[in-house]
Amino acid sequence: MFLKPSDSLNVPRRNGVVITEASLGIVSLIGLNSLWYNDYPRSKFHTINDLNEWQQMDKLGHVFSSYQIGRVGAEVLNWSGVQKKDQLLYGATLGFTFLTAVEIFDGFSKEWGFSWSDIGANALGTGLYVGQELLWEEQRVHLKFSFHRTKYASQRPDKLGSNFLEEIIKDYNGQTYWLSANIHSFFKETSLPKWLNVAVGYGADGMLTGENEAVNNMFTNQDRIKQFYLSFDVNLSKINTRSSVLKTIFSVLNTIKVPLPTIEFNSKNKVVFHLLYH
Image (cartoon, rainbow, N blue to C red; front, side, top):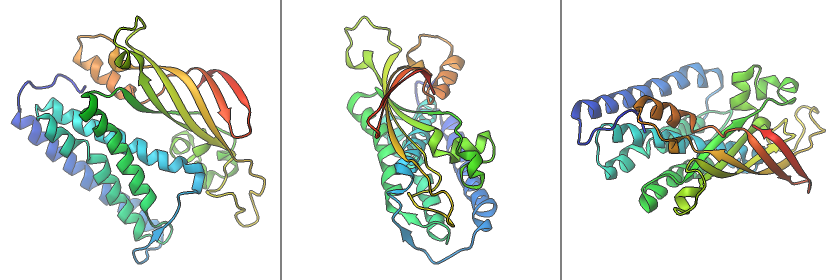
């Protein structure tokens, strides 16, 4: 929850939110077009089928981004006192709208292309947020993210990142996406702490290229595996505090999975225990 929500419609807040969101969206798209896409050749609008690349990790990135942007969009409208229906209609769909515009840019780039599977992933992220609000009027299951550095980025820094910040975005080997469910929300009578979650995660490893193929006769020794995780987590939004500032901080930090003991099941039929996985 962002700061202290208004009990009724606060027109100046709402107008400020709308103007800020529209401005940020336009500036971001202009910046992407000039700073990113201008470095690559343009083409006629075209589509691609990239569903099988990167062990679907890039698709989960779309789901996560759409969910989180939509969550913020809904929460700032809630802060403005906008009614629930409009929060979901105009706020929670913000991620899908913005990422669809980016996808159209991809469609005019020779390097990439418009991906229907990306659009589907964007819709899934938006649906995860909206669906829970319609069903339970709360987010019982949060979509979270964690990252650890891997050995692969140094082998292909142009594709997987040449520094820590780039690696967080580009190195799919180090990314894990989590569905983190709050136990108390499903079992109200439990004596367990209200902030305790159980989380299931997905990641992949051994990827130097999008698909399992060589690039210019390089990277032929990829050992690609899928990884599934089971762990506990902390739902920061369930920690009791009267401070609106702390609630805002907890809302932002609640996008990240807390490192805790984790069991890994992977496609090599191995079970691995991690004392503190992140």
